[in-house]
Image (tube, rainbow, N blue to C red):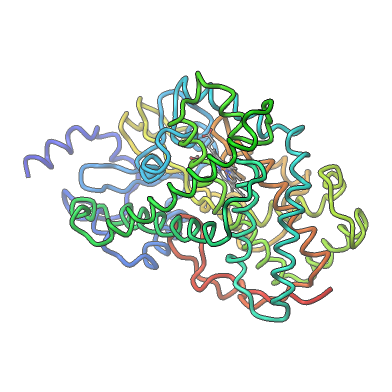
Length: 465
Ligand code: HEM
């Protein structure tokens, strides 16, 4: 009791002015971790609307604040001083040391500057041929399953994984499809285990004695073996040559003062982790939306046909003439942002624009999913309407109401690369197939996962066009 009381005093009383759902004396809202995850998802979404623009949860002696107001989010996401990535990223730290996602300060700044070269517009246009090559494999696989109910995540995940491998290592051949599959399975296991630990923190105490620890260790070992093999082959093949900035490993090796062998390894792990599930989740949801809105699918197909016909593969220049494709993808990422929350730990006090004082030590969440579906920011937020992204409508909104790639200095370094992957994939898929729905949007149920997910996966049918 004395311990909790002491902690409460330390918890600067201003925090208590922030609205907080009823909890139990002393321990606050901590019992929520015992709720089933469906309930937790639904309660959190309701709160984001009811408590807009801010609310707080008290978890024992820890206070966690949820920001929903775009100007407050700008303060958090727009800054790099006085805050770092919070404990939500611990699984990332475990996997990738101080790779770019969790790094901070001078080390982050220098590394970000160098790595930005890799995702510069002039480098990106070189990727489109490689994207097209990998998309050909996807199309072949889908052709074999035409007219059947297909779980899109499986196919899309393989493709985005191959694309990221090519981007990181250049074209390597020693990795077999069995090894790639094993890597993806291990990655899914590690992500699942990390999520479990984040949602049920009491498990951390028992962890060394649980069977799951061995499962986690085995998966980590497999992933490690895969990356070592890929690095070894890529170095043998590419690294004696001049720096090739479209091969990220070669770029990392060109700056030994910034990246020693551990740091190289950390960045490779980071980029696979940050890039794989985000892109494949986005593409899966976009395919679901296309299937569910045949009118939009036809409009998009016509636009693509007008620009590149029904055979030619797109180049990055072609996309500048595909205005509807751009708005369509933005509306998909508004309703279905794969990365649903960003988190920071405050190192110094911050006063929100809504007038609340957040002391150093506060954990702050910016809920991307909830901001982009908030009725105060988007009227009829659940309605899918690409016209929201017509310029005349965009200028009326605060820029931090649309943040699927976050915003500010810590935004997604590979945003343009990801959009290019998505646009190329959609063009090629629609040139080849009509997509019909199996999973109906009105019936989907989201579930808590590392990325935005729906229960039972996303299923569609591909028909020959
Ligand atoms: C549609 C696909 C993607 C989405 C929606 C997305 C979203 C995001 C978001 C929201 C952040 C900020 C995270 C935070 O605040 O902590 C982020 C950061 C990052 N993303 Fe992405 N991402 C995508 C694709 C990719 C890809 C393909 C890569 C790599 C190949 C990548 C690499 C990174 C890295 C390294 C960071 C950390 C940047 C920094 O802190 O300086 N992302 N991404």
